[in-house]
Image (tube, rainbow, N blue to C red):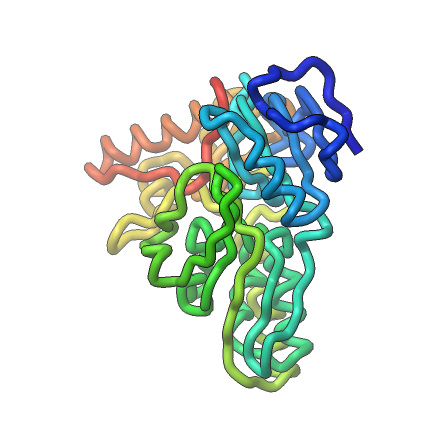
Length: 307
């Protein structure tokens, strides 16, 4: 289904009738991200399947920006919106299949909760920590997402990536060049599938560990608020939240944006905060931590679009 009104013709050389997914112009992104703030996508494309995505990207002009959007759980969409094409992977990309006794093939749109629950039901241990990552496979493969002492690089065998020009490539974990919350995936690449491997385990034991992770998150993080998850990377040898707390930033506000009193490395939208309020608050936190400790906090949350 196509619903496009007067989008710039340079953005796609394909005839609109050839698109099998949904293509919409000037689509508000605030409802699709956890902060519930920010501007619109110039074009939002939800492909019907991988072939649809490949053909669409192949038809884009080389200069068109492309960004993949998952659950929007670790992202600030700036108030001026996102130029170019935002690709959102829906249900066709949320499928999970068992490869062997300890391996799953997961679509890029599958959530961490779905992956970890499927692994539990199949008796695959080692993927429990994905229960604590509020995002999709595509997002945490790109960012080397992690929680509770483990990271994606510990379980990733390979990923299938559609590059900005429509080429499909298989990237091994080694090729991704993982570091802390970082990979070498090029800008505009969309992760459409990943092969994840654990080890044999008892479903009951796996489920108990997942319950422990869920309870720990509930007790320590503001999960029922408009937030963007972990805001800053942990500097070497330090916890970001502790540095923020020591700098006196717990509860700090800019308009309706606030540093969480429950977990200082979370920023909140208390109701009507703009994305600029949230980002300004984050920068103020960075300044205060720098002044107090001489440590520079690095953003973990993606900040995308035009201010």
